[in-house]
Image (cartoon, rainbow, N blue to C red; front, side):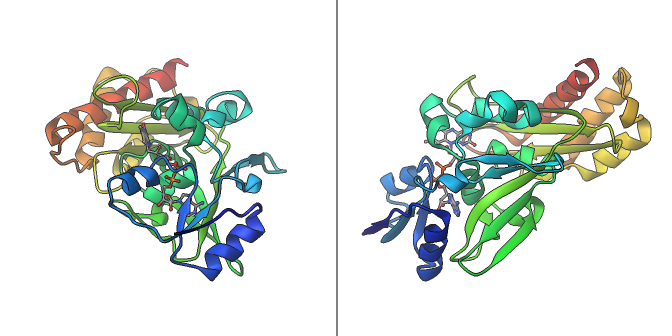
Length: 283
Ligand SMILES: Cc1cc2nc3c(=O)[nH]c(=O)nc-3n(C[C@H](O)[C@H](O)[C@H](O)COP(=O)(O)OP(=O)(O)OC[C@H]3O[C@@H](n4cnc5c(N)ncnc54)[C@H](O)[C@@H]3O)c2cc1C
């Protein structure tokens, strides 16, 4: 096995382009589990841990977006400026694994694995994030909705690196909530991210662990926008709140598996989405 440890993004892109079949590793918190179980036996590995350019974030000059490097560990999203700009991402980051996992695990890895249970992914979806992919000679941007194509499948091409994700800074409210079998070190049974953009008067609702990939509840979003003024949202009437959760559950596509049942997952996303909408009105 050869392990390349590039020291710059330029070298990492060159290495990935020269060897498109090489296994990329960032924090290793997903990949090493696969290797330990013999599910993957990489021959060539490109380790990105020393590529500082992707372990950072920048706020764009117009202050409209945050560009998060694919290698930025969750630990850096939990507090400080980034948490103020993207509170839902901070809430999601705080639920990931343990402090050790959050010190190594990254958005790039969450996107690379593309599990429907990935905690960063509903946040990226509800905020309509754009994923930035590069090779040594090409660069493209793809909507996160087109990037996530199925259970642990994404639109990355061989030789491409996930370099960053661009997320909008919204004037409004955003939150993330998840249900698992305990409160820490747990993969979600169901999760929900809700974003209200008060300037645009729009809402984004995205669900995790209740379908082959992250689900955006577009019909429920449109329905709610017809029922209430999202620019001046106040207390949502109990009957509307109930219908909102019921509609969210209807848009989910859960299955029974070793973690939970489809019926419980439907119930969970209805409850989580109602809770988040209630919080949006009171905070
Ligand atoms: C004990 C434990 C608990 C966990 N708990 C959670 C949890 O609560 N929530 C959650 O969402 N996840 C959890 N995970 C899974 C994991 O921590 C996350 O998915 C994390 O985001 C993976 O990031 P990483 O940098 O470690 O990825 P890696 O393991 O390094 O990579 C994962 C995949 O992404 C690819 N990849 C990584 N970076 C790039 C890149 N820049 N370009 C192209 N491909 C890339 C790799 O090739 C690989 O296929 C847990 C894992 C463990 C071991």
